[in-house]
Image (cartoon, rainbow, N blue to C red; front, side, top):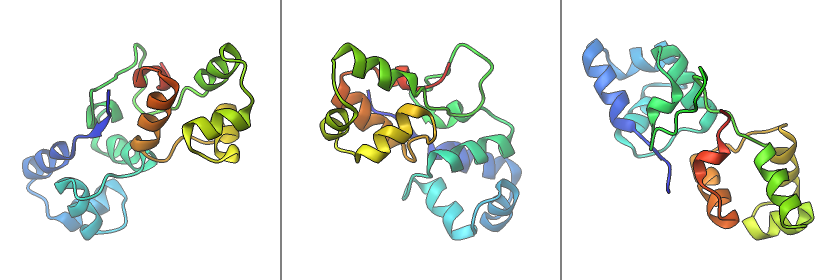
Length: 144
């Protein structure tokens, strides 16, 4: 299952507000109107931290901005990486962190940061990559 950004939600929200690209960008706290325009048209996908920021400022759950929604069963409103899934997979398959990183196609440092919870994958593509390479449901990578 591939996770995608629902850019049309940004366009709908902007239209409902009747705001310019500049006002929307300023309101949600992103770089500028050009960046907002690229996000709302789907020309580029915002990083996960920006998706969270947009959602908080729009007053919605970040899970409303991705498809499939993958909304966890709790009150979580922002996308958080379930880092324990990596260690569980690694232990079940008796793999070193280095071997796991190579299997996924990321650096050993990135695997270590993700598995320890120090960092969250920056893009939805990384969530997809990890789930595909490890044979996990992408929903299992989101904090519940």
